[in-house]
Structure formats: structure tokens, C-alpha cells
Image: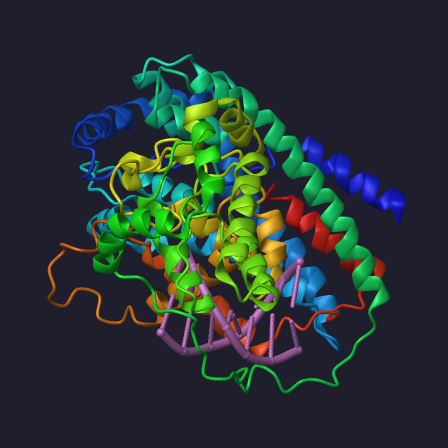
Length: 518
DNA sequence: ATTAGGG
DNA sequence: CCCTAAT
């Protein structure tokens, strides 16, 4: 067992970058300058390809496209062997990935006309292309869909931005490249230097996870007493909310009032605090109102500038029991809020307040979270910077709403294909280890949306001109198709854990297969 | 602590 | 996204 794990680990390490996420360079109409630049480059690239093909990208390309059939073969062999009695979900899901890639890369794309290729390209990258070269189109699309990152595009992008030539690296660090693609010259060095750390982390997590999975598989015999799920949805009490989602209107009004109410309540405790931390009343609406409705005592609590909520909320609830009296509770809450600020600096709460004191925490945060900001040019948002929280305006939004990147989506899809829909925590820990935002719930939600989209994509282009959906990333249809496929598949073979009482060889194959993508 | 669903 | 209920 242990030795096997060791082997796998080393294999993993040998495979180079564990981050197999895609590196397609997306650009869409929103950034017009880049758009134009890229457009021009498309043509340029077209002619450059032969050259690069000969040296760098030819092997990587062939690796990404041609190598997979072998993996696939190996995989289907193993699964055929063991699918007999008890089905191994792992094996099944794992096999679907290469299948998909091959499908995309060879079957689909090969049969498409140039026009169709153009459409697919547009769907995949969110922009048009004028390139006529069928091969080139197929490759780019396949790349975008396959998550393979070693391609000519990377080197070329960097070249265009006059960045240090990363082209030498056969294995590309996607995040670094993407960062640089967006924010070429300035302080990006900091972030890129941090990347190796994340890579290591990723690897370690993966390998340890693999161990865990393995042992679990062996320990669990087949059990199927509860096989009813999937049919009946979980029934739940008609959910009763504490308070309706605040409307902007309400917020405005309370923004001004809360000051007064605070003063009236004479929470002197605040004034002492206010020396250290600038008062932020505008943003306290939400919590305030919530407390208000909870306590019923009309308490208004400032300072709690949109705290992470998950933690404080618990406390609020607990406190409610013992402090029907609003003031005492309020005091405690304030303290809580302060604690949160100091110990858990995060975008939501931190922002402004932290800016006053010092910034080192932010750096640390960046390092820990390895937030690949602005990975995707096409979904670039101006206030994407965690530190650049919406300051003045009273519109403290929720979690800043990070648009899902195509690469994120694909990671998600891949994760679901590997671990099954529903194992969000697993997917979170593995596929999304480097994305600190994106909670498992986020993943779940996104998957739900993807599913919806994939099922309702029948009318491809009815009316409703292309005005709205340009804002968010247009999910490539192939991906949607895969989503649908996975959904169907998983409804048939519920990812009932245990699933595999694999024989040694089967388990090994599964793991090896998976590492093939890393 | 995680997951499913409703909002 | 957020929130609650269920597990």
C-alpha cells in the first residue's frame, strides 16, 4: 500500500505541472485593445505555427492530442475488466475524460467545416477569428477544451507582451501566464513567484487524497441498502427565512439612520474603537437589519461591516438565546466583528478597514489563497482586486460575484467527471485547491447552473439578440454537452461511494489513468 | 461538516 | 450568491 502510494507520488511529480488547467488565452469584446491585438496575432500565429511546431510545441501538441488514445485504451481495458459485477464509479468517470478529449479533438472537430470551426471557436473563446487554417482552428479549440496548456499560444502571448520569454518552459505554468497575459509588466512578479508553492501544495493534496481514496476503497465493501436516493429528492420544510434579502432601497435609508440609532443606544464602546478603525456604517445594513428582526429589540449594530457572516451568524444565533436584551448582544457582536477583522482578514470584511492599518496581510492572503486573479481576460472585472473593495458607495455587495472562468468551469466539469456530482468537497479540495474562493457550495451551484444550461440549450439561436450573454462567459457547447452527458451518466450510476471493491490492478489503473492528466 | 434545494 | 434544512 505504502509503496504503491510512493510510486504514484513520484509518478505524479515526474509528470510536471500538476495544474493541468487550460491556458487558452481568452479575449473578448470587452477589452477592445487586447481584442484587436489578439486578432492581429491570430493571423500572425497562423504563419508562425510551422516554425514552432518544429521545435517546441510539436511534442507538447502531440502529447495533448495524440497521447490520449493510449490512455483511453488502457482505461477502457481496466474498466471492462472490472465493471462486470460491482461497478467502479471511479473507473467509469475517469475514462470519460480522455474519451471526451478524443471526441472533441478528433471526431467532432475533424468533421466540422471551417465555418463550423469558426463558430465553435467563437463559442469556446468568446471571440471571432479570421484564421482560415482548419488545423490551427482545430488545435486551438481542442486546446481550449482539453485543458492542455502546453501550446504555442502561451509562448506567443508572452512574446507579444514583451514579457520575459517563458516560452522555454515546456511545462507551462498556466496561472503565471494568465496573470501576465492580463497584467503584463508590473508587479506580477510577486504572484508568479508564489505559484510554485501552490503547485506543490496541489501535488501534496492530490497525492494524499489519493491515498485516502485508496484506503477507503479497500475498506468499504459493497453496500447497497440505501438505493432509493436519486429518485426522491430530499424533502425539506418550506424554508423560512429570517429576513428577506435586503433591497438597495432599504439600505440607502438605513445608511443614514444607523448612525443615529447607534448613538441613541449609547454604545459607548464604539467610540473607543473608532480611533483604531474608521467607522463604516454604510455597510452594516445587512447585519443590522438581520439583528433587528432577530432580536426584535431594534438594535442596530454598526461596525459589523459585512463580516463573513458564517461565523458571526452562529454567534448571533447563540447569543440570541442568552441575550434577549439587544445591547449586551450588540456589544458582544462588536467584539466578535473586531476579532474577525484581526484574525481573519478577508475581502468582505477587510477591505477598507484593513487598508487603514496595513497591507501585509493582503500579501499573505494572496499567497495562501493563490488567487489567480483575472485569469480570464474575457471576464475581467474592474474591481476584481480584493483590496479594491467598493469603498464609498453604500452598496456592499455580497461576495463580489466572481465570474466563472471557462477554465474554472472546465475544472469543475472535470472534477465532476472524476469524483461524481455531489462530492463537492472533494472536488473543491482537489480540482479547486488553488482557488480559495469557490466554496464547495459554489461548485454545486455552478454545476446546477451548468446543468440547466446544458439541458436548455436546445434553441441555439432564437431571438433575443446577442446582447446579454456576452457579459458572462459563453460556455462552449461541447462543454455543455459533456455536462449533460455526465449528468445522465451519473443519474444512472449514482456515485454511491464504496462502489469499488477493486482488485489491486484495477485500483492502480484508475490512479495511473488519472495521473495521466496531471 | 457537508450536501441538497429554494430564493 | 445566500440561506436554511437535512444528514
